[in-house]
Amino acid sequence: MLLLGKYHCRDKHQWEWSSCTFHPLVKCSCKGCKSDVEGFVENLQCPGEPHHSANVLKCEFHALAYEVECHGRAQEAENKYVKWMQIRHTYGNDEADDDDTCEESALQVTEAAIVEGRI
Image (cartoon, rainbow, N blue to C red; front, side, top):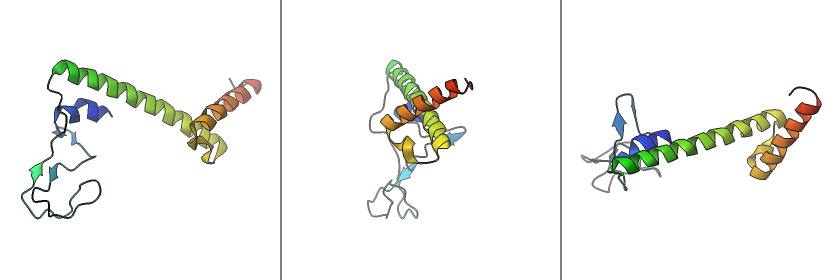
C-alpha cells in the first residue's frame, strides 16, 4: 500500500532501491506472448512496452492526499494483522479468520489476562 501511494499512482514503477512487484515492468505489446493471470510474461517474444498506471495522479496535492490515505490503510491492515496473529498464536486454529470471531476472541484473551493479573 505504501508503494502504491508513493510511486504507482504517479506512474513510477522503478526507483533507486526497488520496483513495483505486483505487476510486470514491461508488458507484451503484440498480445501474443503467453502470460500468467497477473500479466507476467516468462519469455517475452516481442519488444514489449512499459507498464503504465491506468489513473495517474499528476496534481501533487492529490498525489500526496492519496499517499496519506494509502499510509492510513496500510496502518489499519497492519493493526488488523497483528491482532489476527495474536489470536492465531493463542488459539492455534482458524478462529481468527472471521472478523467477528476475531473481535470476540481478542476480548476474551484480554479479559483472561486481566483476571490472571498479566495485564
